[in-house]
Image (cartoon, rainbow, N blue to C red; front, side, top):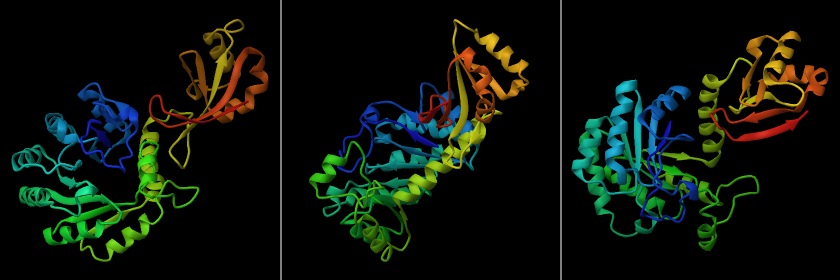
Length: 323
């Protein structure tokens, strides 16, 4: 589960991909807006989360909230629920000890790129102290020019280095273009040359990993969606290989049939009651059934379509195909 603590951050990294909508003091668990501790637990249960990544913005600007949520997750799911945290701050020893005591398993430091060629002593000190607490400790930076120096620092400290293939987003594209970055190709958001830099750095790092744009898009997101879909799918929903849900939607014509009358019509047609459900002013039904019966019910309804959407409440519609 991705636990986005706050969109507030004072670093202004030129490559930050966070949307303008999230650059505020708001909290999300995956795509769910969090208003209470209960929301976090429900989201974790919905996807069967085995662990949580805490991110932002800068999550440690809200350190009390971070500590509370770590304790909450460990209490609910036990010590095996792995929690890691990203921070761009050189964290002091006292807070590091609090995080470790609360149950944080792993911390990843992200020094902004503009200081890679200058003094990073504050981060060196923080990393050493984090290692002393027993937490798994490392660095995480984009695969761009200068990352090799960060790798050398990681080798000296004995910590790991995660490299991320740099990507364009709606919010960072202008800053990226100003600095001469371009797209790798027409079908990807990845930056040209970033993967090559990452592979070069892997040759010198002792403990390292390169997370490619393809992996983030095709594997991480897909796995998360599939976990959610497997738990959220209704009897009649079809789960796609990408983790989206497909089902039919009947919008009734109130001048012809009420919802209850439409439901009775479906039952009378031999449709099992577990294969459809009344949802507000619509009837959701198995897509294959709707395709079979569309001609015989067309005179009673306003609209029929097949929907594909993300599997969480209010999930974005990927495709709508009218029948």
